[in-house]
Figure 1: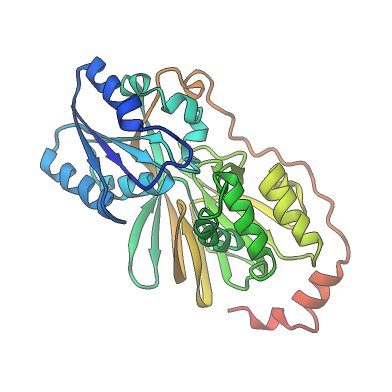
Figure 2: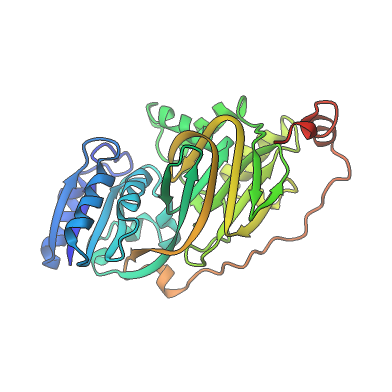
Length: 347
């Protein structure tokens, strides 16, 4: 088997050294494997490279290592989609690297020798189709609403001194909290409508996103299902600030709030009146209508030999205690369904 290391040279705020020289080259030389290192040159170059190498392999087994952040893994995933002979994994040096948290996190995946000898498991994917006809694949999550807007602004926040990892996401969230916390897109889960308006809606294959936000604490990347986390906008300022920044971003207890729906499904669909931001594994763009479906056992993902996931697979049972729903809340009753007329503007 040939091993390909696809590095994003721009990524790397969370790894101060030269990851190729410090970690990868010593490990591959010690392991005696056949390998090739490729440094991407522009956005989308990694996807193009991986797809070409998959075709060149002509059915022979190959493995790709995404050396970078979640965006690099996104490109490797889309380049490898549809090829049964391919294994993928990640060597983290980005600001987030959220997908691998499920399998132990950075510490385990930076042990490149352990990763080369790792175990391959079948993991699910997420298939997206939007109103332009574009079809793509995600491996971690897809979202619309406040968090997608915050993710788009996160890239700008990374330019600030000291803004790395979760700090950049919090700063992006603080900025969007004032203008992007009320969304009126339509939502369906397994063809059943969920009424808004919304704070955010996320379809998850794993548990973390946004540089460490535990958005779907019961998700399992191998169960063939989506964990859909939908937070309706039922409260006004400053309560939405507490829910969005403290409960969701910092503490991960948003699913206990009466405004949050936690559903397990095969498909979720969003439709907006005008183009809005969507977040696909940390990559953002504008769409108007998008459908996300779970694709069971879509990829062969390599997990380090000593990953705690292999020793004890986490329980995916949805364990949410009964919530107390207020009989009357002014914002939900007056703004959403009363004089503001949201109820008459669903589409």
